Image (cartoon, rainbow, N blue to C red; front, top):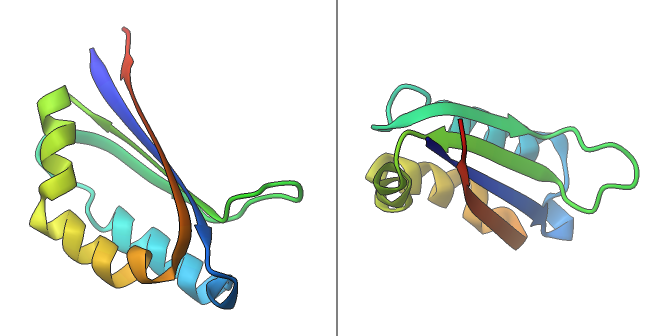
Length: 100
């Protein structure tokens, strides 16, 4: 069993550009291998026409406790504070159990 964490962001209008999106992707994906229990991370920053979000984060954790620890992990929060939170208008989150 694993736990998936999915985030959708809509950026503030003045920050809807490739440089900001690229920073979000590179910043978050730099956490790969640094977060205990996180087995997968991917950030999508190239939405197609008809999308109403600008970026998506998808990551997988071994346990629910690992997912909860991620939320308060200092490395994760430093990246989010620098590359994500200042530019975000709307954030949607869905966490769920993945059955094997």
